[in-house]
Image 1 (cartoon, rainbow, N blue to C red):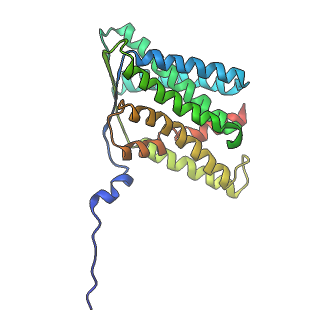
Image 2 (tube, rainbow, N blue to C red):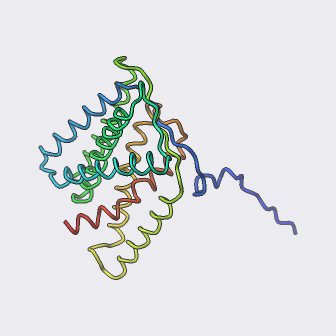
Image 3 (cartoon, helix red, strand yellow):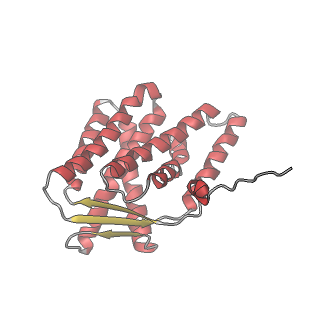
Length: 241
């Protein structure tokens, strides 16, 4: 009797390979900054109108965290972040990173906290706003020729976020069994969903408008781990404060 053994193609395991290291690039026109800031301004107004003050404060915290990580740590110390801008200067690069940290930090952190503090039923419309806003910002930048000089932002991706995320969620699940911090399995799954949809919405806005130069599998992998590395920390901060 012969048993046929079928060998899976190596590509079948590519998605789950956490040892992949690659550059993640973002290429966009200068005028994208204008539309991104407009969207961020509308977002902040809606936070105040809907009385989401705590998420707004976490958004400011996100701005500070992102600037420190992106500029001070990745760009200045480890050199894993690079940026190419028109007519570069030291002051212009600092201003760019201030913008870079503000819109991303304000929107993503405040969105995640809004989702954590409220039920999905009460906050689903924020998901729609997040996706429409980021997709529309990129679309208007491509269609309206205001300032078309290219900006290229690149980052050398490491593996630390994978292992930290797995470890953090392992700790959260262990807390479920001993009834600590008001956690159960459903809440941990919801927190993971919040982390995923937060970054996936951002990535899809870039991908749809061809700002992100990568494949869909990489975007899905990044969405699973990138922001989820911080979600458990944000959750505990909401408990403390």
